[in-house]
Image (cartoon, rainbow, N blue to C red; front, side, top):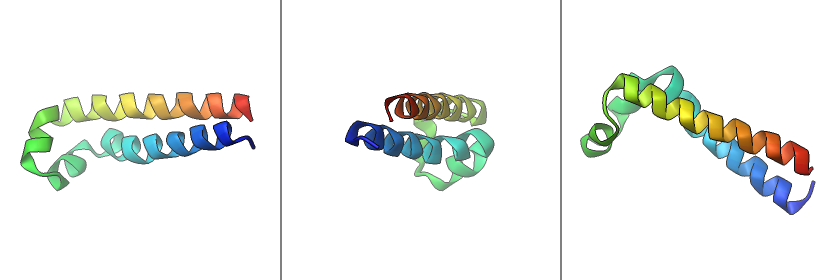
Length: 69
């Protein structure tokens, strides 16, 4: 595996680890953050959208990493 593929795979894992909880349990993630961060994103629906966006970036990075490897 090339260093670029390794870096992309690590970034993909980071995005998936951050995005999946926000996508599947947005209320739990929102309640664990300080109020100023939770309010910056919005309600549960907004958090679910945030999680979906982060997960889609993670999947894209994983696909590119697999193509580079």
